[in-house]
Length: 158
Image (cartoon, rainbow, N blue to C red; front, top):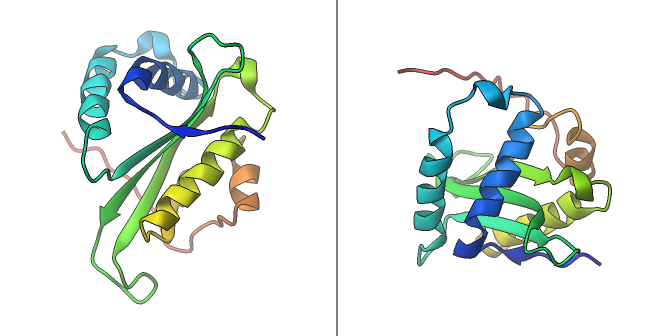
């Protein structure tokens, strides 16, 4: 059985490293400015210190005792207007589910997702959303996620 835990401030550098691993699967990281890492570190420091956390980060420590992380999954809670399919208006957004290439195919992402789903249940959040990569889609389907009938769009406004 894989042991998971909630991330703490000492994990910030490793969470950033794993995010870079994940992003490198579909972005050329050589062409990207690194200022996002500083901003991410500041955000994580602030969010990990919240008294009533609305961001949960589940991690698995690398089994080699290296003080590195093998995997992580991040989730946030937001409130929107309630509706018939979600009377509480509380939604979970799951992202940054990633396993270091060295530790893949050992169930670490699944363990992180299982723990993150428990984190949401403890907080009464039952409607969850995520974007699935091709490599992650099978796991998410096994966990009960389906393609939403709602049309999704994204814009970038500067």
